[in-house]
Length: 210
Image (cartoon, rainbow, N blue to C red; front, side, top):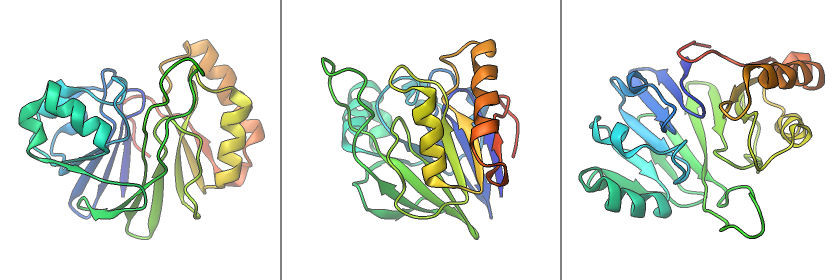
């Protein structure tokens, strides 16, 4: 298995001929989708969903109803190859995937509470979890957690406690465009100290592999 971190919240998972890309958004380099066999989108915010990137690729898209509605408006050609998935639904995206949870973290009580799906992805004997913009657990043990590390809807203590509660063998930082490099460095230091060492916390540079 090969995991590559791309801009912000996007990760690319390659295993046994399948190339699954999660959340290619406006901060994502176009090469993230080169050779993609499937794309998963957690929710409709532009840092996770870029119509232009989807239009430049021919891979099938799996996502929630709210995103499918946006695709119909902004990238209608992509809608024909879009499959809507619901919480608890398992599907084959080249790799086995299960959609989990339903809501984005609360940004502010006066703002809409957006829909959001996390995805459990199985690659061989490894289970990976991408929560999108939420701190709801996967409901099972996982080997790799893609951890949001900066967001206007979260405190660093909440993010670290979420990682602890999931208890993954490896924790990979994502959602890291909100902080400056200095701010990210502060969080990385906290995470390394507070997430148990045997679980392994890492923040990869864009384009770097795990």
